Length: 218
Image (cartoon, rainbow, N blue to C red; front, top):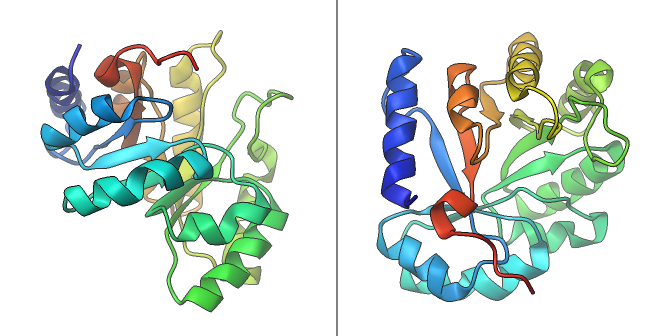
């Protein structure tokens, strides 16, 4: 598999779903990948990447941004409240807003900076106790709180379905919640299921191993 293969599969899935070409953004998940692999994908023209940890992104992306124009990096892993200010200086989007304490901290930091990254609320669609995310029953209230109490411009929703369940059920649920709340963006779908996510409205898909190869064990 390669970047070109994934891009072609996305294009086919868009067409099959009756969606405009280029309407789905590919996030190349570069977490724990060696710099040489990331550089090779940058050389092929990919400009949107996903990182799980603030510290790893801080050590990797400032240098790449100097080398390559137009790079965007999205945080797709958990954000600790004490890393908010650092995250705002590193990421164009945060996909993991999942609790009111974090919303409050983001709101204060955004007001101080005068600009805000794109924000996605993470939803725990499978209600898994070990997984982060707002429970489905609480999504509407949380969206309202973020907008009305903290004046945060919520762009969309994100989810990671349970590994042992049909992901399409979770993608459909996420799409329904987004539509109900007037949210245009859906961050859903990974290497094994992104075509099904696109069929159900994904605007951002997160693909790692299929582009970079298996992660290097640290």
